[in-house]
Image (cartoon, rainbow, N blue to C red):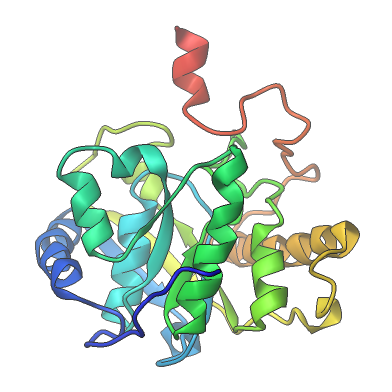
Length: 257
């Protein structure tokens, strides 16, 4: 049985008291340390279930991503690693804002799909980082992603909006918690039109179809990132499935210990 969630309410749609309090504190801080290049907000549906996806470069990503969505009319729901929800005070705030814990790389990780389905079923916006962790690519390009996003998109047939972002890694470098305040860094967030997963409808249990659909989604995101960066992607996409690096966590810290 899927968990029950309340339909989205408020303005921005999906907000609540905790979300609003956090936004009122964090958005002015983000405005002080960043500048914004926001494009394509017209592609974000004003109502109804929607999945938004982005590449993942920095611990700061979720805040600038949520700011972009919040200021354009939607208060998103995200999956977050369970350990963060166990941090005193922080965990309660995240739960109060409607965010969802997930136990990554464990047998309970499958529950993430159930929660995502329940959130979308009642009409929320659901944010996904398809890679599942910060990119391991040394130049910040998107990696080969997990297939969870494709499965979710195929099952729900909800619109999937790709949003490429760049710049957060200059404010808070990948796998670092140090913040560069000055000079203010431009954060690029560009939203594209909905992705077309229709060729894979009905194939949510077909591993090959899920791999193809995932590659399609990440290919679009990477093309959008090429435009932002003014560079071409590498010929070989970093694949965490074949790498010796751990699948999740700060591999840089582990390699230095």
